[in-house]
Image (cartoon, rainbow, N blue to C red; front, side):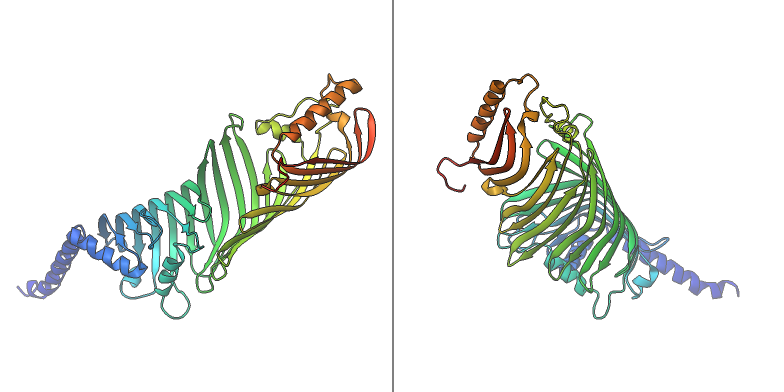
Length: 427
């Protein structure tokens, strides 16, 4: 009897705790509990939130699982959710439960779709949500961490209402460990995309950095691998490999940049850089691309547009080019463009939207590029006339200046070839 009495209180406390856990475990499965959690998340995000299913766990650590989670769009961005997830599972530390710093041991999200969008006036649908979530950390520097983050079967659908452009990325997989503010962490990303008749896959692996206090986000030492397929590419598709030294995004200015990027695609080795951002609601983009010399015949065949046979087998043997581009107020300008095709050095600029092209070349031996059966001067002259006639049918504004040219056996100096629109006006 003496032994049983002292055990009564601990046993009663354990029984009460188990009963409370059972009630809580059962309670979270009710519609009332899901609505309560949805209302709580709505207050945190500032947007309507609905939860279709919910469950909790206690061992080995507290966990929460949400199913059919949806965060609605801000006003003016359509009816489809800004963010939806088939399932989200979060495990936290016991210290977090009892009021400590937010320490998420793991976060796993599957079957999620994010729909970032830009309105016609340049406003976006994600800045408000990010600012609201950033305020949850309270005053002082952020002090949260995520031990492991896994995203599976994700998708991203982007829409810019200004020009009604859309694109979609699917099969997104993200894996990252030891994430904390202002500290680099290892990250892997895989994704796929579909557009018209083409499909592509891309994998990135490197180190990421999140600094919400300063609004800085970056990725470093990224290794790239990819594949693209679909018409007119060959049945086996084409592969690319490359890397990015630094990619950054500044939340305060909205500027994004890629520094020292490199890629090899179908034998073309190139280096590129990019800076993008919005100014007064207008999207602005600057980029550059430089290639090493490559064999254009191989590339043209790989992309489904084989080059014709030529009288000189060495013609179209090597090509190299550099270009710089700017996108301002919806107008893309490529200036300057420089390069070398075989023995011809050329430079110029182009405005694709206006179908405007200006090219200057130092010299051109056009006879090398005629078909093998066009051996006489008469044959070459007839072919040249056909080429000029075909150019005349194009709806473009083009000028080609050649300091010295050899055509149909004749040597010409200061050649100017012009193609004008029918009405003489810009498109």
